[in-house]
Length: 191
Image 1 (cartoon, helix red, strand yellow):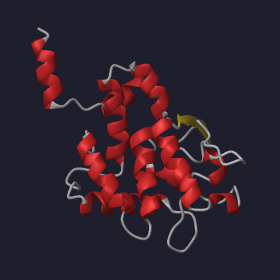
Image 2 (tube, one colour):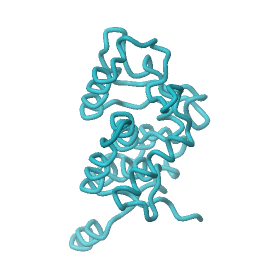
Image 3 (cartoon, one colour):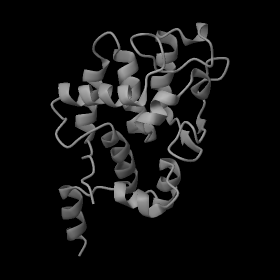
Image 4 (cartoon, one colour):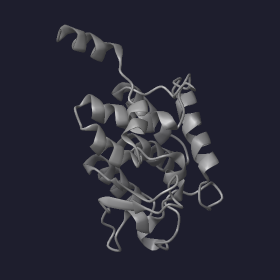
């Protein structure tokens, strides 16, 4: 079995968010990592989002976002924009002037103005991790794995996490979970 990307702590994510926010494409880059952290999206799913997927005509954030099988890995799925992600999306909508853009336009655009590709999304996130000195054993998938691990660590039922992750089988979701040394010590104290 291949080694999975390491997860991030809350503190490491905060550093990534700070790093991602810097520069010309800071808003876009920060939204990309937040979509992984707060919704567990894959790079392909992040770059496939259109403005109309995430926002209603009045600019309000869509809470339950449906992804088609073309946008996702192999089947349609829904992700939830929780209150933290909705706040970030709302700010992005205003700051990027999305109300003036075609609703079918990509949510995240490249420096040329076209849709960001999955490869470019992976590269953007890799650069954020590198600039935060957190790239060792981490990738864009680290944000997705962290999302899963956070939920399971907080006692959320694996079947519900499976649904949020867009997995067909709970055993796949369980592979994403990463126990940390503090959790192991706490569990050992229960004996």
